[in-house]
Amino acid sequence: MKLFIALIALGSLLFAGGFTLESNTLEGQLTKAEEFDGFGCKGKNMSPELHWKNPPKGTKSFAITVYDPDAPTGSGWWHWLVVNIPADVTKIASNASSTHTLPKGAVETMTDYSFSGFGGACPPNGDGAHAYIFTVYALNTEKLDVNAQSNSALVGYQINAHTIQKATIVSYYQRD
Image (cartoon, rainbow, N blue to C red; front, side, top):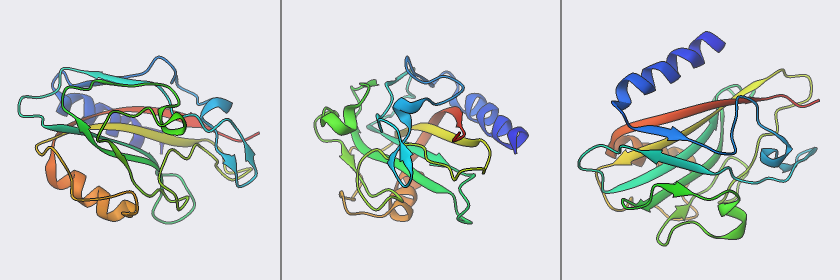
């Protein structure tokens, strides 16, 4: 599984052609700051600081997703989906989801926790480390036709239909 994630990350870097995603708060391992507060987890549920550089020509907006492919659901788990981030924005502040300080016009859509907004890591006890894939997408449209109640499958479809390039960071988390 780790090799698979490494190949995804490498492929994203090669595809990105200079478009990169970075974070001052994320490292190889998530912390209690990014852990969910619920479902038996007792974290702070803070969305991380994210910033990106060198977006491709033709970018009209950005989207951000956080996805756990290791969730024992058969289809993974969507932790955060943000769309309609204006093209002149290149940074999301730490805890922007909870403090409602996302850029003007940005829309958080439904996660697999059944709410719109950031839902942190919360892998089942004893399930081992899960990968959390943080991705920023450069899109060829200013706005996706979705809203806060739109489900992750619809949002993912819309994002993929308009992606020019994407950049990814992978972090891991395991409950004690």
